[in-house]
Length: 121
Length: 134
Image 1 (tube, chains in turn blue, red):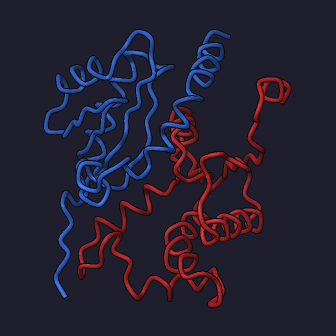
Image 2 (tube, helix red, strand yellow; image 1 turned 135 degrees about the horizontal axis):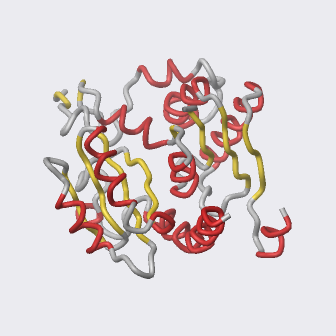
């Protein structure tokens, strides 16, 4: 039996999913890099994966949300970025969890519309 | 700030809505994070140890599928116990899987009803008309 020493203990990982007409994941990534201060930022096709201490991650996410509040969505992730147990490049095929996010991204425009109308009333 | 259990537990939209309005979402990521960040003996991929089924039996019967007690009950049921409220979306298209998953989902919803915690329990709206009429 081998020992298991977790990578990045005590950290929090979050997805930042961008579904916006005006802001691209690249824009959000650049803004996140500007304020990262030690937080790990992984850019991908739908947004970012942000990992670090919880208060730092919350700080970065609060700031990037301001770019387009109704079109940026955040979700917790259990694994750190690039973890071999979930990484698409390691396992091959679609990443486990891809289909869930793919499905929900089809609904996000309706959610964004509702958020904008709620903020305007 | 309340702890809100979300079902489906992997939902991006529910997790974001709960966070956006100032509460803490309890989803599967929280439980997974606890498992993968706990040191111990190597037990890939999710560090499920022989202790997990024993702890899961507090919620599920021993004759149920193994996934029920070892996996979901051990990770999800504690979040059900600590939540202050719950949001349940029934018949969600992304909540599909094997019979073990189906049983797990039924048990989770049962535990939430048994707890009588406040929250929302609604069905997925399949058409715009139904969504706008609700």
